[in-house]
Amino acid sequence: MNDRAKSSPTVTQDVSAAMGELLEKVDFSLTTTLAPDPQATADGDDHAPREVKSGHFVPVAPTPIATPEYVSHSRGLFAALGLKDELAEDPRFIDIFSGDLSRAPAPFKSTGWATGYALSIYGTEYIQNCPFRTGNGYGDGRAISVAEVVHDGRRWELQLKGGGPTPYCRGGDGRAVLRSSVREFLAQEYMHALGVPTTRSLALYASRTEAVMRPWYSQGSTSFNPDIMKPHRVAISTRVAPSFLRVGQLELFARRARVDAHPSAREELRMIVEHAIEREYAGEIDRALPFAEQVLALADRFAARLTRLVAQWIRVGYCQGNFNSDNCAVGGFTLDYGPFGFCETFDPAFQPWTGGGEHFAFFNQPLAAEANYFMLCRSLGPLLEDDAASLEELEQLRQGFAPRMGQALQEMWADKLGLVQFDADVYTSLIRLMHRSQADYTMFFRALCEFPDDVSALEGTFDVELSEELGQEWRSWLNQWRALIEQRGDVDHDTLSSRMKQSSPRYTWREWLVAPAYEMAERGDYARVRELQALFTDPYTEQESELAAQSDQRRPAQFEGLGGVAHYSCSS
View 1: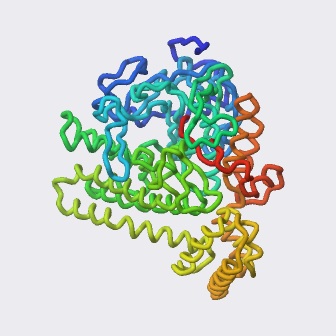
View 2 (view 1 turned 60 degrees about the horizontal axis):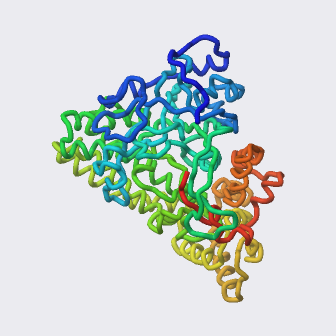
View 3 (view 1 turned 90 degrees about the horizontal axis):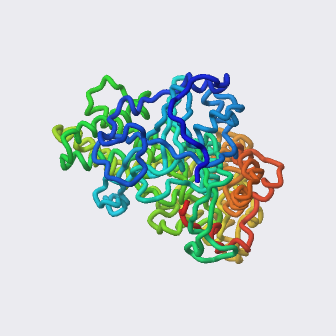
């Protein structure tokens, strides 16, 4: 399947100037600071499912995709990392970021690393997802980090998604298909442009010849679950973040520490928490503080980031779809673009993923966040068990999460509605009216930024014809809202309108526009991917492209209930 032969030695010669600039930034703080699995192989040939009972990471050599070709890269992230755009099509760069480390110039290594983590759902611990029913076989099944990059004092981890199986693969093939890779690449670009904390996209490469079978939807299918198996081209996208530490990762080491699973269990928990503080909160938490105070500061700062993150998700209409502890980044940013979607027709219970259920629906995300925060606090508990005062403070932080989440949401809604402060009556009435009118979430709020005098200016964003009664309710609401706007004496309408437009994007992710991009990509045509990338990297600004005009429309009737568009499986 893979037509690229492996060569053993790592070489340093014959690199371009652009590649040389990257090599100067490469570092490996995770693998030099934390403990490797003592049972790991020396050469990274560790691709079959097995229990990993200790250590923070497993050295793994990625499995390169066959005959890779360039799809796209993020110019914005390249600039942020101090890299030249030409590097994206440099043969050495393509080798590394399509999974071939065998010829990688130093200081790259011939192996990357994968990490284990635990799973909890709404505060309930699970081990059934582990093939060994112990929790020791669950983690990065197809995500392999290959290096860190340090630029302008910031550290970024580079991780291949779809880089082949690891000991955590649970019998999977370790591949990501082009469809899901395109979605993740574009979604990360879009969320960053929206101002929502997120992992980033570096580059995307697809195989011209390698494919895998996945369940998906037949042409025109309205089935809820995929109804056919079909071949998909494979791809590797490189996602980038300060770290890929998850709440579930801390949770794994805390579970082991609670039962003294091995002699180093408690020390490994302490090490991973120290590493999380250094990687994600170095500028906010004083490392000279006693360790217990650092742990409490971590819990406090994470709560601040997580509440803001979820409020921002709701601001832009994003639904994570599966917000378990293993999909919750310790750094407080969006992680894992598998079952996600963006709300088009407003519904508080919007959930695009067929496996998600209402508990992970659009407006239930604050509750899921609270459950994940509970698991983080529980994971920190063993480090404070000899300090009753610190444990009590940790519990107070945990109990204070819901009020902090509520405050973050109120501040977000006040900004989105142009108000000085949150008004519960205005908000509650608005949500009820939007749901009854089947308002397009993005179009409605953008139209509201123009301070309409009458509901007629909003009717184009509704999917139902307003009855006389419903129309009158909207007029009453508009009068109530505008009265609050008029009470503001701090800004004029034009300034306030501009501010509100920075809370309500002009263009949103519409699955029926994205699906053709990955369908075209499957045929080797990446033009639509790049057009969407251009649209999504400037979502607040009026654009004149044909794609922008299409994006300013409600979902056409032929896509209602369509599998892979109106709803979709996470088979990626």
